[in-house]
Amino acid sequence: MPKPAFRIHSEGLKIARLLMVLSSISPLFILWAIRGNSLIPDIYFLGFCALGFLLPNAFLWLRICKAKKQQDSRNIKIGGADDHRNHLLVYLFSMLLPLYSQDPGNMRELLAMLAALVLIVFLFWHLNLHYMNLFFAMRGYRVFTVYSPVDGNSITGNTHYVLITRRPGLTAGENLVAYRLSNTVYLEADT
Image 1 (cartoon, rainbow, N blue to C red):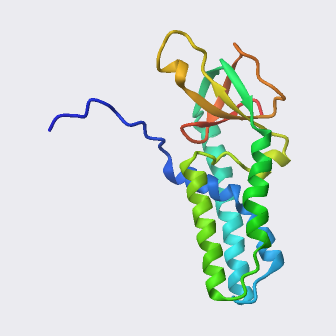
Image 2: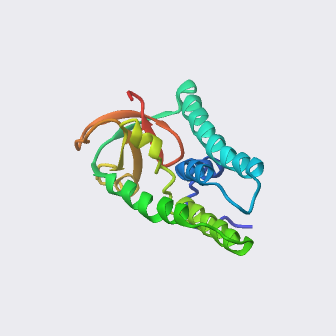
């Protein structure tokens, strides 16, 4: 059987991306645990909230440690960069606040809220928004989309990455080393 003439780019690290999305929404589980739920006994609900918070964040921390230990890094040359601080505001207002403000009074409302949560997780995963993490922001990290320099190569000039760094800005032509968290998300090595 002949191979297709084109190759579809695979994002890769699908489980890592999914757990990074879940770590992005993990503050919601803290809010839910504080608020409580009248439909589910506390022991189960608090256990669910604890797992929803701890498991994805532990994975993210382990992924960062593994990337550093294995020197899973890449040299990135900055062609251009866009700051994404406004994405954090969109994230907070579009996802955390509406889901927190819902108070399911019956099982049907609870299932609707969980379905909305699954939809948001899918959209964040599908749109590669797995770099949105409140804990990065709290620790002073910024998120940039970094564009490769246009050097006449049709592939490198069209590639872009998400860079998580503590730098306030990035300059075109700058070179830096970053650890790979997923195939499109990198954490600057000096941070």
